[in-house]
Length: 233
Ligand SMILES: *Cc1c(COP(=O)(O)O)cnc(C)c1O
Image (cartoon, rainbow, N blue to C red):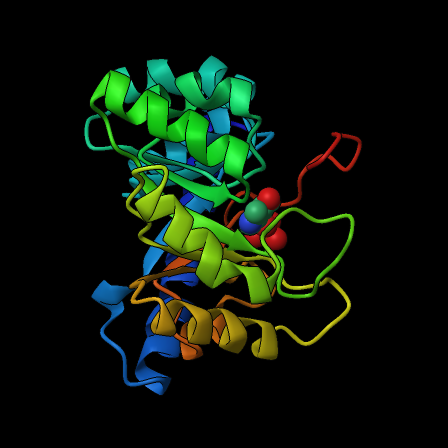
Protein backbone atom coordinates (compact mmCIF):
# COMPACT_ATOMS: atom_id res chain seq x y z
CA UNK A 1 0.00 0.00 0.00
CA UNK A 2 1.45 3.38 -0.89
CA UNK A 3 1.42 6.42 1.34
CA UNK A 4 -1.44 8.10 -0.52
CA UNK A 5 -3.72 5.10 0.03
CA UNK A 6 -2.80 4.99 3.70
CA UNK A 7 -3.72 8.66 4.05
CA UNK A 8 -7.05 8.21 2.30
CA UNK A 9 -7.97 5.04 4.21
CA UNK A 10 -7.16 6.62 7.55
CA UNK A 11 -9.04 9.80 6.74
CA UNK A 12 -12.09 7.86 5.53
CA UNK A 13 -12.14 5.49 8.49
CA UNK A 14 -11.74 8.35 10.94
CA UNK A 15 -14.47 10.39 9.25
CA UNK A 16 -16.85 7.46 9.39
CA UNK A 17 -16.19 6.82 13.10
CA UNK A 18 -16.65 10.54 13.79
CA UNK A 19 -19.94 10.50 11.86
CA UNK A 20 -21.15 7.54 13.91
CA UNK A 21 -20.22 9.35 17.11
CA UNK A 22 -22.12 12.43 15.93
CA UNK A 23 -25.16 10.30 15.09
CA UNK A 24 -25.07 8.52 18.46
CA UNK A 25 -24.82 11.91 20.21
CA UNK A 26 -27.79 13.23 18.22
CA UNK A 27 -29.85 10.16 19.11
CA UNK A 28 -28.95 10.55 22.78
CA UNK A 29 -29.41 14.35 22.67
CA UNK A 30 -25.84 14.81 23.78
CA UNK A 31 -23.26 17.42 22.74
CA UNK A 32 -20.58 15.68 20.62
CA UNK A 33 -18.00 17.86 22.37
CA UNK A 34 -18.69 15.72 25.44
CA UNK A 35 -17.38 12.56 23.78
CA UNK A 36 -13.65 12.16 23.27
CA UNK A 37 -12.51 9.67 20.64
CA UNK A 38 -9.40 7.70 21.63
CA UNK A 39 -7.82 6.13 18.55
CA UNK A 40 -6.34 2.87 19.82
CA UNK A 41 -3.08 2.42 17.92
CA UNK A 42 -1.67 -0.64 19.75
CA UNK A 43 0.31 -3.00 17.47
CA UNK A 44 0.45 -0.31 14.73
CA UNK A 45 3.62 1.54 13.85
CA UNK A 46 4.27 5.19 13.08
CA UNK A 47 3.60 4.54 9.37
CA UNK A 48 -0.03 3.73 10.20
CA UNK A 49 -0.38 6.33 12.96
CA UNK A 50 0.94 9.39 11.11
CA UNK A 51 -1.85 9.44 8.49
CA UNK A 52 -4.40 9.37 11.33
CA UNK A 53 -2.68 12.35 12.97
CA UNK A 54 -2.61 14.05 9.57
CA UNK A 55 -6.37 13.46 9.32
CA UNK A 56 -6.84 15.50 12.48
CA UNK A 57 -6.85 12.94 15.29
CA UNK A 58 -5.04 14.08 18.44
CA UNK A 59 -5.95 11.52 21.10
CA UNK A 60 -4.45 8.01 20.99
CA UNK A 61 -4.55 4.91 23.17
CA UNK A 62 -1.95 2.22 23.83
CA UNK A 63 -2.08 -0.86 26.05
CA UNK A 64 1.61 -1.46 26.79
CA UNK A 65 4.12 0.91 28.32
CA UNK A 66 7.09 -0.55 26.46
CA UNK A 67 5.43 -0.38 23.05
CA UNK A 68 4.14 3.14 23.71
CA UNK A 69 7.58 4.30 24.84
CA UNK A 70 9.11 2.95 21.64
CA UNK A 71 6.65 4.79 19.38
CA UNK A 72 5.31 7.93 20.99
CA UNK A 73 8.15 10.15 22.24
CA UNK A 74 9.21 10.73 18.60
CA UNK A 75 5.63 11.25 17.43
CA UNK A 76 4.89 13.63 20.31
CA UNK A 77 8.00 15.62 19.43
CA UNK A 78 6.97 15.80 15.78
CA UNK A 79 3.28 16.65 16.26
CA UNK A 80 2.18 19.08 18.93
CA UNK A 81 -0.99 18.61 20.92
CA UNK A 82 -1.01 14.82 20.83
CA UNK A 83 -2.60 13.23 23.89
CA UNK A 84 -1.75 9.68 24.91
CA UNK A 85 -3.96 7.36 26.99
CA UNK A 86 -2.90 4.13 28.70
CA UNK A 87 -5.77 1.67 28.32
CA UNK A 88 -4.09 -1.65 29.11
CA UNK A 89 -3.27 -3.22 32.44
CA UNK A 90 -0.34 -1.56 34.16
CA UNK A 91 2.31 -3.12 36.38
CA UNK A 92 3.20 -1.07 39.45
CA UNK A 93 6.88 -1.11 38.48
CA UNK A 94 5.96 0.73 35.26
CA UNK A 95 4.23 3.56 37.14
CA UNK A 96 7.21 5.88 36.71
CA UNK A 97 7.32 5.50 32.94
CA UNK A 98 3.53 5.61 32.69
CA UNK A 99 3.19 8.88 34.62
CA UNK A 100 5.95 10.42 32.49
CA UNK A 101 4.46 9.37 29.14
CA UNK A 102 0.68 9.22 29.45
CA UNK A 103 -1.91 11.98 29.79
CA UNK A 104 -4.50 9.55 31.12
CA UNK A 105 -4.46 6.09 32.70
CA UNK A 106 -7.64 4.03 32.33
CA UNK A 107 -6.57 0.91 34.21
CA UNK A 108 -6.20 1.78 37.89
CA UNK A 109 -7.46 -1.34 39.61
CA UNK A 110 -5.56 -2.09 42.81
CA UNK A 111 -3.84 -0.69 45.89
CA UNK A 112 -0.24 -1.36 44.84
CA UNK A 113 -0.75 0.52 41.57
CA UNK A 114 -2.59 3.38 43.32
CA UNK A 115 0.31 3.80 45.75
CA UNK A 116 2.92 3.63 42.99
CA UNK A 117 1.03 6.19 40.88
CA UNK A 118 0.57 8.44 43.91
CA UNK A 119 4.33 8.42 44.55
CA UNK A 120 5.21 9.16 40.94
CA UNK A 121 2.60 11.90 40.57
CA UNK A 122 4.08 13.81 43.50
CA UNK A 123 7.67 13.11 42.42
CA UNK A 124 7.18 14.13 38.80
CA UNK A 125 4.63 16.88 39.52
CA UNK A 126 2.66 15.52 36.58
CA UNK A 127 -0.87 14.28 36.96
CA UNK A 128 -2.43 12.11 34.28
CA UNK A 129 -6.22 11.78 34.38
CA UNK A 130 -7.11 8.64 36.29
CA UNK A 131 -9.88 6.13 35.59
CA UNK A 132 -10.63 3.21 37.88
CA UNK A 133 -11.25 0.08 35.85
CA UNK A 134 -14.38 -1.81 36.86
CA UNK A 135 -14.74 -5.54 36.22
CA UNK A 136 -18.47 -5.25 35.60
CA UNK A 137 -18.86 -8.89 34.60
CA UNK A 138 -16.82 -10.13 37.60
CA UNK A 139 -14.75 -12.14 35.14
CA UNK A 140 -11.93 -13.94 36.97
CA UNK A 141 -9.43 -13.57 34.11
CA UNK A 142 -10.06 -9.85 33.73
CA UNK A 143 -8.52 -6.89 35.51
CA UNK A 144 -10.63 -4.34 37.34
CA UNK A 145 -12.24 -3.66 40.69
CA UNK A 146 -15.43 -5.61 41.37
CA UNK A 147 -18.54 -3.40 41.16
CA UNK A 148 -19.35 -3.81 44.86
CA UNK A 149 -15.82 -2.71 45.82
CA UNK A 150 -15.54 0.43 43.68
CA UNK A 151 -16.99 2.94 46.19
CA UNK A 152 -14.52 1.89 48.89
CA UNK A 153 -11.60 1.76 46.43
CA UNK A 154 -12.29 5.27 45.10
CA UNK A 155 -12.55 6.56 48.67
CA UNK A 156 -9.21 5.02 49.62
CA UNK A 157 -7.58 6.36 46.43
CA UNK A 158 -8.62 9.85 47.45
CA UNK A 159 -8.19 9.75 51.21
CA UNK A 160 -5.30 7.34 51.72
CA UNK A 161 -3.24 7.50 48.55
CA UNK A 162 -3.74 11.14 47.59
CA UNK A 163 -5.09 10.49 44.12
CA UNK A 164 -7.77 12.42 42.31
CA UNK A 165 -10.00 9.97 40.46
CA UNK A 166 -11.62 11.40 37.34
CA UNK A 167 -13.75 8.54 36.13
CA UNK A 168 -14.42 4.85 35.57
CA UNK A 169 -13.56 2.50 32.74
CA UNK A 170 -15.07 -0.86 31.79
CA UNK A 171 -14.67 -3.62 29.22
CA UNK A 172 -17.89 -5.67 29.13
CA UNK A 173 -17.67 -9.47 28.77
CA UNK A 174 -17.23 -10.36 25.09
CA UNK A 175 -20.26 -12.64 24.94
CA UNK A 176 -22.78 -10.36 26.63
CA UNK A 177 -24.86 -7.40 25.54
CA UNK A 178 -22.77 -4.41 26.64
CA UNK A 179 -25.57 -1.98 27.60
CA UNK A 180 -26.20 -3.30 31.15
CA UNK A 181 -22.44 -3.17 31.83
CA UNK A 182 -22.25 0.43 30.60
CA UNK A 183 -25.32 1.33 32.66
CA UNK A 184 -23.83 -0.22 35.79
CA UNK A 185 -20.55 1.66 35.28
CA UNK A 186 -22.43 4.94 34.76
CA UNK A 187 -24.46 4.35 37.92
CA UNK A 188 -21.37 3.65 40.05
CA UNK A 189 -19.65 6.76 38.63
CA UNK A 190 -22.66 8.95 39.36
CA UNK A 191 -22.95 7.89 42.99
CA UNK A 192 -19.24 8.58 43.48
CA UNK A 193 -19.41 11.98 41.80
CA UNK A 194 -17.11 10.90 38.95
CA UNK A 195 -17.66 12.72 35.66
CA UNK A 196 -15.70 10.68 33.12
CA UNK A 197 -16.76 7.34 31.63
CA UNK A 198 -14.35 5.39 29.44
CA UNK A 199 -16.48 2.80 27.70
CA UNK A 200 -17.21 1.57 24.20
CA UNK A 201 -14.94 0.00 21.57
CA UNK A 202 -15.30 -0.49 17.79
CA UNK A 203 -18.21 -2.92 18.16
CA UNK A 204 -20.28 -1.00 20.69
CA UNK A 205 -19.28 2.66 21.00
CA UNK A 206 -22.69 4.02 19.87
CA UNK A 207 -24.35 2.03 22.69
CA UNK A 208 -21.77 3.35 25.14
CA UNK A 209 -22.47 6.92 24.02
CA UNK A 210 -26.18 6.33 24.61
CA UNK A 211 -25.28 5.25 28.17
CA UNK A 212 -23.14 8.31 28.86
CA UNK A 213 -19.59 7.48 27.69
CA UNK A 214 -17.27 10.51 27.67
CA UNK A 215 -14.35 8.53 26.19
CA UNK A 216 -14.69 5.82 23.54
CA UNK A 217 -11.68 3.63 22.75
CA UNK A 218 -11.76 2.71 19.07
CA UNK A 219 -9.03 0.70 17.36
CA UNK A 220 -10.15 -1.66 14.60
CA UNK A 221 -12.70 0.73 13.09
CA UNK A 222 -9.92 3.26 12.48
CA UNK A 223 -6.75 1.24 11.89
CA UNK A 224 -8.22 -1.98 10.53
CA UNK A 225 -7.67 -5.47 11.90
CA UNK A 226 -4.73 -6.07 14.19
CA UNK A 227 -2.33 -8.92 13.57
CA UNK A 228 -4.07 -11.69 15.54
CA UNK A 229 -0.71 -13.35 16.21
CA UNK A 230 0.19 -10.45 18.47
CA UNK A 231 -0.09 -11.43 22.13
CA UNK A 232 -2.73 -9.47 24.04
CA UNK A 233 -3.73 -7.60 20.90
C1 LIG B 1 -7.68 -2.91 22.01
C2 LIG B 1 -8.56 -2.18 22.97
C3 LIG B 1 -9.60 -1.34 22.50
C4 LIG B 1 -9.94 -1.16 21.04
O1 LIG B 1 -10.62 -2.27 20.58
P1 LIG B 1 -11.29 -2.31 19.11
O2 LIG B 1 -12.28 -3.40 19.20
O3 LIG B 1 -10.19 -2.58 18.15
O4 LIG B 1 -11.91 -0.99 18.88
C5 LIG B 1 -10.35 -0.68 23.46
N1 LIG B 1 -10.11 -0.80 24.78
C6 LIG B 1 -9.13 -1.59 25.26
C7 LIG B 1 -8.92 -1.69 26.73
C8 LIG B 1 -8.32 -2.31 24.37
O5 LIG B 1 -7.35 -3.11 24.86
